[in-house]
Image (cartoon, rainbow, N blue to C red; front, top):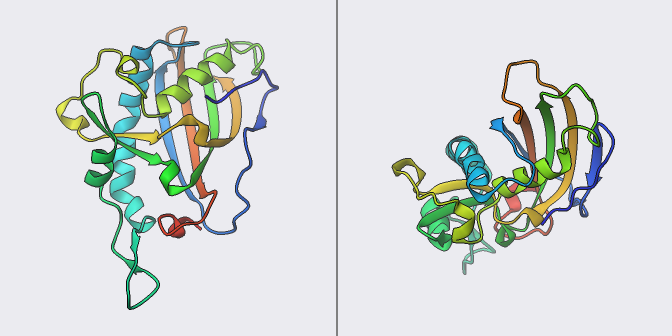
Amino acid sequence: MVEINPVALDTVLRLGQWPATEGYDLEFTLVYEGDLYSNGDAKHKHEIRKQLHPQLKELWKLKLPHYLTMAVSSGMSRKVYAGPPTVEAIATNFTRNGYRFVPLVMEQWNLACALDILFLRKDEKQGVVHGGDIDNRLKTLFDGLRMPSSAAELGGYTPSSDEDPFYCLLEDDKLITELHVTTDTLLAPVSPAGVKLIIRVRLRPFRLSELNTDFA
């Protein structure tokens, strides 16, 4: 579980060692708009996953084939590129509680994840410390970014026809190694717990392997 401490406005939290490997990072943006509760329950966290699922599905379709390669040994050369790992293979590996999950940031791929979040909410007070319990709301978000670890974390949901497989960002939120949060006032009318989050995601290997060479 990622631990968030009260911090000042527009700050960087170093949650771990961001890889120093030089190379090209994969960057993309996710958007969440809706309620975000402090210490939200399982149902609320899965509703966050459900909103992000189609965005991540589109990412896999449009961008990831250009980055991911699966290298296999060959007697003719050091490795032969067999194309990207198939979604079906990943989903089969992460079949849990009636769902077939496809996380992007997986420990098997040795990928680290940095998040740069523009956190817009209805609150006159600016700053993270006094901004409507921002730290506990971020903990809810991080749980919504990762694959649930048990049936209890699904909030009673079962997958719909367009959620097989189900795409999520993280296998585990311990793979978030850097977090940058900027808070501001959301001017559009929303519920008291309503937010709009612009989540910029950056991926980089923390250990090079044949499964992640296209990221480095």
